[in-house]
Length: 102
Image 1 (cartoon, one colour):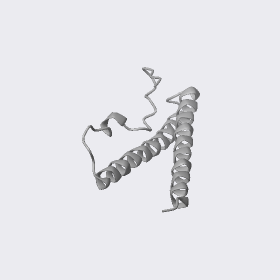
Image 2 (spheres, rainbow, N blue to C red):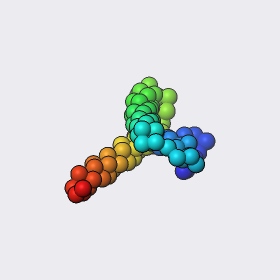
Image 3 (cartoon, rainbow, N blue to C red):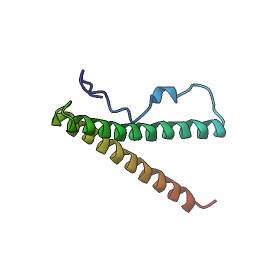
Image 4 (cartoon, rainbow, N blue to C red):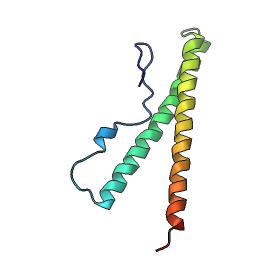
């Protein structure tokens, strides 16, 4: 992940290492863990959107330059794009599971 003293990293994905455990988990625990992972990822996208609005407001009153606005907008766009791609993959996986014969 690229970091800069003026730019914070995109924080879309939560710490993946926190999800990996060495013990066996039950299906309910795995489902809860996955749901928590998705919720935190979506919260990260929402935070990016809020950041864009905040930076836009600061730009309008002259506190930041246009480069920060462009960077914030691009980060939010990439976060949303990644979220849409993950959603599409989840839907494809679900459809594939539904096509399986038992």
